[in-house]
Image 1 (cartoon, rainbow, N blue to C red):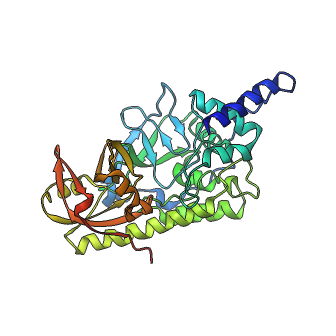
Image 2: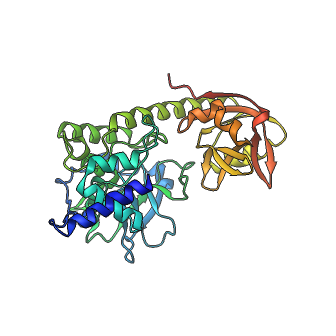
Image 3: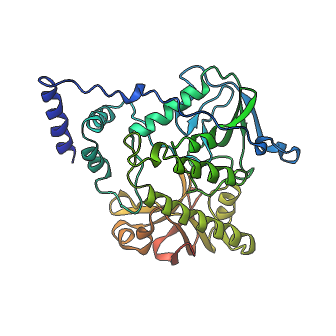
Length: 362
């Protein structure tokens, strides 16, 4: 695949000597968006929920506040802000590989899609860079231009940090003497669907649903036919997958409250809880990852918790690949077996797994 890509890029470079140079510069794509929505009364944080206010901060000056369409940085916080309810398309980075892919995307979008989607599961499509992702970043840069203060609020006191250590946040800004909820506005602009892969927002679910419905009705951004810029072609598949996971998570969360033997990964207290179950039979629920080959035929399948701190199902790599668990990548699963500790970290040996089921979505 790499050789094919190299040949494609080389052909483009050679042909550029005789043809006009491709001028599409996604990194400077200007996308101010449509007029901002009117203020909503629900943006005002009730006194009883003041503990959800993380604070008010200035946008990060050095290096810029906008990382991409769904990630921001502010002064005074070490962690980036991962914006709840959003999953914008990716932006092109500065690596040599991304620079080559950007040339291909600008010249032949269909060929670019074949390249980035090669080998992936069509029912669990991966994320990748696109012009629409660049547009989302551009909109964010327009939105925060001349903004001096952003209000950062949490969605849930128990789920304040995402898998990669970023703060899960709602961001509100006072513009023209009215509060604007940036997360909801990105969805309303048609630059992201309402993202529920890791569960719906507890506080603004109706607002996100209304924003997506409006964007769809107006055929904005990703919802255009065709989209206003090259974008993911498979949102129908993505949304089906996300809503299945959302439903499974709701079911598992409710079940955990009434079944003390079930541990649903994701929270710090749950990591401590599963560690305390060492040498006991337990039922662990989490999002199944890809089988990973470590060495000498040994490997593992992670159940997602936090980066570099997942619950691992360990064993012979060939047996792991052939196990039912390997067929549930990207889905919530419930695994029952004996919990063991290795260097203080909880895991399960494949031969001690008693059952694996995909989390219910009905």
